[in-house]
Length: 519
Image (cartoon, rainbow, N blue to C red; front, side, top):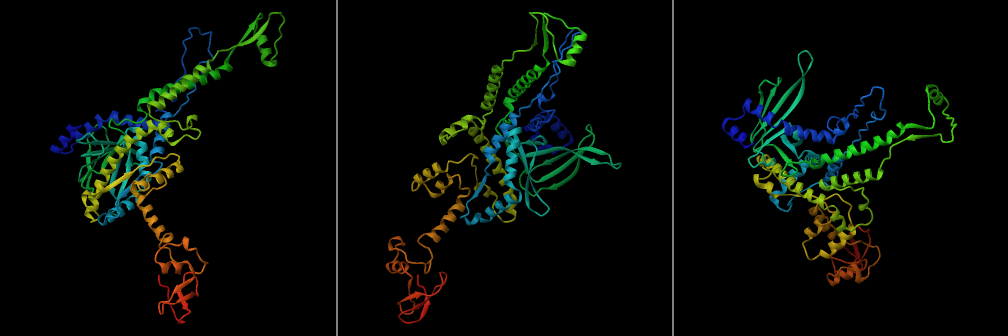
């Protein structure tokens, strides 16, 4: 697609260019839309749902089959299971956006990111982006300025986007297009479908429209988007831009056909033929049978039975199991309802079972991080104009991902205790699943140290403490804290606490004066 970049650099955007881009990317965009419709189990997108009954050529009008009308179309949305498992595993715990809060120059940036995340519900935004990325191979995100002057973000359907990049990386675009259709009412109130194409570059947003497909696009609006980079970018699933189920759709179709055919066989049992041995039946006998349900057998060797098919259910079961196993293995997914996940598996054993899924998520995690880094590069270009940060401060934002799996808190606590003193507290705390924000946790630990450690405030007249249990500071402070007696500031004598726990007033036995408790 670099030829289009060169063309735009030299000649700008022309109606001819827009027509070529829309036509050339049509098949790729339709494929991504088909994947999404299949995820939603749309009738037209799932092959088994449109399967017709087998038309047997009987060649004899007098003979009619009664079993060819059974046509079960059972959809097993294993592709949706693959996607949902990955999204829940990777985005069940929200991504943490980390900025060094101790650096004074980054304080405003940290506050701006927190506000941006809250205003745009970034937890949900990341999850939806991850879902469409896993389904279609990549998702798109658009940054814009709302009417209140706030930076906003929204997910754009990947089948509506055309991204041009000099590096072939959709997360680093030079130009981007959004192509979609909208409905408007004409002067007579009739609904008219209009094609819209929005072009984005580093400074400008241009809106083109057309009503007739054979007519050229016409420029309708042009405005500045207030960023210094292209605000429409992609979030790739992998370098090949393939969805998680792209390689196993044929296997899923085979699973659907096998299960549907097995269900057909079960239903056809009730369409079996009646065999009469040693006797015949005319129309009168058939009518009598339908009315009474009684047979009269006169001969010694007369017999009646149904002619049925023998169904090898074990073969069907083995075939379905093999198909499911191959689907999950080749898609690098897992079935958490499988009995192999039952019991008290150790953390290491669980990680081996999840290794394929984890490797796939690691690839997407790196791609997602690259896209998020570009996102904050664009945002920092706007925040720099407001004096919040510099243009290069997007490099000081870090992203932490935590997998959504059952936590073995005891093992983590034991490992954390063993690491104490061997690594920094920040590193040690970051390995605990229950700690979402390491900086916040360190601040809370400092507060606890002041409240419950050596800096604990005096508790007042609530009984005495043993000297062995008191903090060992100065000798006079130790003796003062071990009882309810304090030191008078006027004469240095001892006094009795006469007020409540929160009061610091004393009455001195020696001089009779009152003063403040000396720490």
